Length: 316
Ligand code: SF4
Image 1: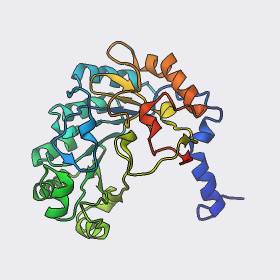
Image 2 (image 1 turned 60 degrees about the vertical axis):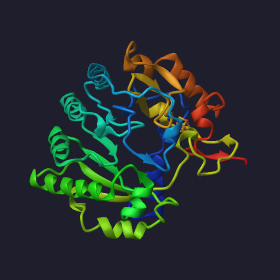
Image 3 (image 1 turned 135 degrees about the horizontal axis):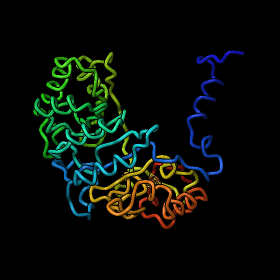
């Protein structure tokens, strides 16, 4: 019997096929190399958004050395299988003057998918031209307001009019350059300060984005930032397996690899890519221990996981 995509059972099977549960039935196997590589180019930021726990950032601020960046990309790019590369971390990626060069390098190593998340306050027409020409594939822009008052009080230190104009310029320039990429995701996050105006957000952006190019809007929800905030009440015990250690690797700007992008202070370190290869960290004993712990729901030794709400929990 042919599978029908409109059929409820077929959709359920497809959804199941996407879960790591099916790919890693006993959590003993992992991919030969990470399929997603999250590389923090910088942890500097020019904003003070109300929802972000930046005041808790205890790490030194800096930018990743370009030589180290190239080493990581080279090691993670196996001949046949390339990871998706995220070029941001706990900071604003456009503060990095080497960002266009990093995108170019990643594309030169055959990376098919490059991605950044930005506040777009520094997305000047010149920067737009540079990242489009470098080959960036996708860009998510956090735009958490619908007018000057709601935006400026939520994304503090940024300016509604400047960012709005930057994004309009970007859309125009991408068209002028006859490029479909980077595809744009415009994200809104309802908070107490922006008065939860998702409909006004849609009304503002729907006429401007190019859906045929793959642009879209996204209405997100607050999360706990790996324990940096407590927006969502979390139960005592994690009862699902967080699959990050099986699929992706996060690297801080100084070269230390950590369990995931939620670990903003680098307290769950897996290794150091200044002295180890990606392969050594990915197949090494530290990550093997993390996989073993997570697969048995043992998260007690992982401070960032303890109040993370990306995993299912039970108990009060
Ligand atoms: S449980 Fe949360 S903090 Fe821990 S590795 Fe997974 S996403 Fe990161």
